Each structure stands twice: as C-alpha cells, then as structure tokens.
Length: 293
View 1 (tube, rainbow, N blue to C red):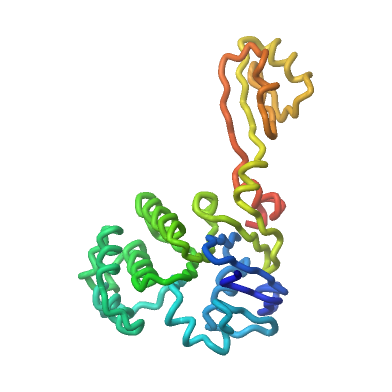
View 2: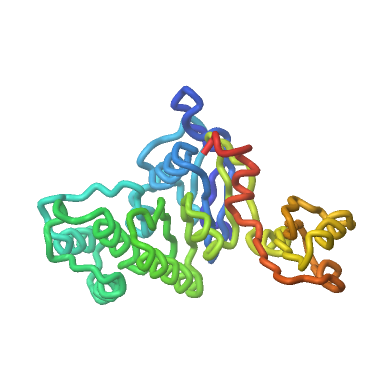
C-alpha cells in the first residue's frame, strides 16, 4: 500500500527552477529519503504535499486523500517539519508548542514533554532570543507530539549540533520500528544512509534515480589502500588483474566489488585501510561533479 503518491507533478517557476513530471510513491512503514542540494526541488515537492502551493499539473495523495482538495484533513493528521519554520517570536517556546497542540486538539501533553526532555530543550524563553538549533528542536516537538502515522520532514537536522543530530536519527529509527511512514528531505548523506529504506535523488527538478538502500549497501564498491613492505612488491601487485586506482611508493589503492578473498590471500601486506563508497559518491555520479552542488 502506498501512503504517499506523487503523480506527474510539475511546478515551473521559470529559469529551470521547480519540479518537472515528478513521480514518486512511498510505501506504508517506509522511511523514504529525498536527496538533493539546495534549489533542486525538495522543498517545492513537500509544499505541494502540504498544499501550500498548487501545481501547474499533476497531483499528490497522502493516505488516498487529495493533497489539494483535502488539505485540511491532511494537515491535522500528518507530522510536518518545514525547512523554515514560521514562529510567533513574542511567544515562549512552551507557549508556541501548546498553541500548536491546541490547533491539533492534543489533550495528552505527555509525548511533547518526553520530546522536550529527550532533546534537552528549555522552552521557557522567548523564541526571538533562541538559536537556530533551539528553534529546530521546537519544530521537532511540534511535528512528533501528536504521534502521527505519517511524517513529512524538510531538512530536519538543520541547525542541530552533532549530538542532537544523532538523537534525532535515533528518534527516526524508533518511529520506523513502530511502522511509521516517513518522507524526509536532506542533503546530509549520513542520515539518509542510516535511516532510509529507499532514497530518491532529484536534480534540477527532475527525478534522476530511486535507490534501494539495502541493495546499494550490498553493491557498494570498496577501495582498499594496501601498504606493502617494499615498493617493488607494490609495483608487482599493480600489474595483477585488479582495478588499481592509484600507486604511490609502497601504497596501492585498488577498487573491489564483492568478495575480497582473492585480493588478500597471498600478499605481503604491511597495512590495509578500507574506504567504502558512500551515498555522497553516488550522488556526485548523478550530478556529474562538484560544479553542480
């Protein structure tokens, strides 16, 4: 069953900005990553899901509800964290959280309190005096506090320090275990690799790939930096039937996919370092180099 469906979505702002003929589906219980640099179309897509903007063509559905025609129902039930949160700056953090809780008709505030504690948030101060990280924590509490089955998160770890980023990823993994459906945009490769079942890569408004993260991890290439005892041995090895990327002195960098037994079975190896292909390298493959990012 698909919880989120995006069909032929197009929003053309001109000058190659927007999204174009976008087709995506997210299954029930799936954590789905949406990966791309700023300006690629991630936020535009999410704003269509929340019906904050309307498409030139195409349609979006959440739980079989039309995102444009039934936006009021969707917005009450979905956990949403925008990339840029509109706060009422004269409120305290706690006042704002309770204001959102009232809008969502939340009677039990215990989950909000647990999230406040989990993220070490002091919500008593005025929002206008808070750091970006503190404001992001308030946004996280507001998105998760009504225990939604569907979460739509736009750059959710923006502004969080590394400790809180890790805490957030643990929260995502725990929600995943509960069977929640999560659509999460990001340009952070680590959080996508760690949490997502599948990931879509978007480039200049066009969908260029949807990758299954389990398959991706099984097919990743590994680069081995082999240090030999002597330069002569390194040179001899470089002539073997391996994909040698670089040779420098007594060190050889070789790319291997799959079983490495044949690589290390009979070598006079002094040291061996491993570098696994990252999602970032896959991303750069689709973007064709650093100039586009």
